[in-house]
Length: 203
Image (cartoon, rainbow, N blue to C red; front, side, top):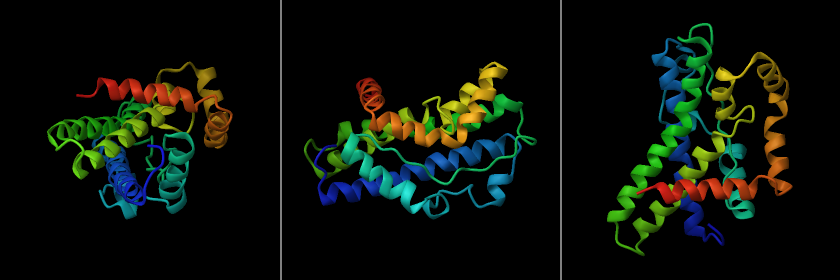
């Protein structure tokens, strides 16, 4: 998505709002189904993007990182949950975490399917192409096993206690670690390769 036009940026923003709303809703929904009502009480069991977005981290940051690195780095307001009320303990928390990125994978699959039926070169096909790429990028990025990303929550459920302790210790610096790796060139190419592998798998 190099050299984005103004219309492309509008499509990107709209795609992010839809994709992040579904992503965060699924965190809240799975948490609710597993017995925790924290997210529901805080209004996060909703598809309304206003309940989930952070203006800087959700809108401005991904546009900048798409232009610079070809992949979005972004974050919505974290969906809260209380582990005391979640069924299956750490594995329940892993299910809550995985629900977000896998919802983006399903959105990408659905978008790719519709794109195949759209008129080649038309606006709909173009917009869906951006939508698919963004959702694949959200799926891949959020499954990185670096706290506080969703992938770290999944890994945590299966990790030995020393690794869990280490992950807890670096969580406050997690996003800075991700930014540093991207800026140093140690993650941007890796993310692009993973994104392309998933895109090649789509219908």
